[in-house]
Image (cartoon, rainbow, N blue to C red; front, side, top):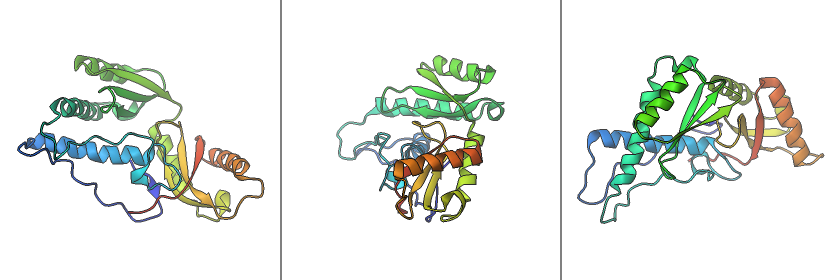
Amino acid sequence: MTVRNAGPAHPEPASADESPTGMKPDAGLMKRRRLLTCAAVVLTATTGVTAAHAATTAVSEPALKQPDPTATSFDAAFWHRQDRLVDLRGWTEDLPGLKTSGYVTSINNEPVDGSVVLVWHGPPDPVQRQIIDEARRRHIPIAVQQRKHTMADLERAANQIFAIESGTGEFHNFRISGAAPFSIEFDGVTVIGEYIHPPAEGIAAADTALTRALTARTGVAVTIEHGQIVPL
């Protein structure tokens, strides 16, 4: 899942496989670290996109910690904690019945405390119970965050919004730069862009009218973030 944007695709993130001098992680660990790095870029791109920040440099999430190549000791405990979380996410995503459950996504808090937030739509079901039981079996703290919308609803709404041409329809005075279907801080779609001309009624009033119109069109809550996704 990525922010839909009007610019060219971003290049691959820099490798996170390098470790301090004299230490070489095994192949499985290297693969998991690559997944972590990609996940960090995607999560940052879709949570808290702010004005004048590129999708890969938004600042609402702390940067994923990487081993310091000049360090004299390797933070094995930190990487072990991250590896456990990535393994749990892989186990979760392979779980039968996941796609028809209320699962939206899971958020790893490895820089904080090594816990997991299970983002969920609808009432608890056997799949949620399995995920919680598995996390506890692995001694990983887990919490559930309820959402109004499924991931399918969010992605459908983001695609609908991104299909509206700047300067037309609801965007008759708005230039869209991107649409993010998931945000940690908002239960809906985040639209990134700027007004083509200063709105006569003021930005706050224009934002309110625009979000109402987009919500009515998509059936999903919408918020506006002013700025532009700058292609790298």
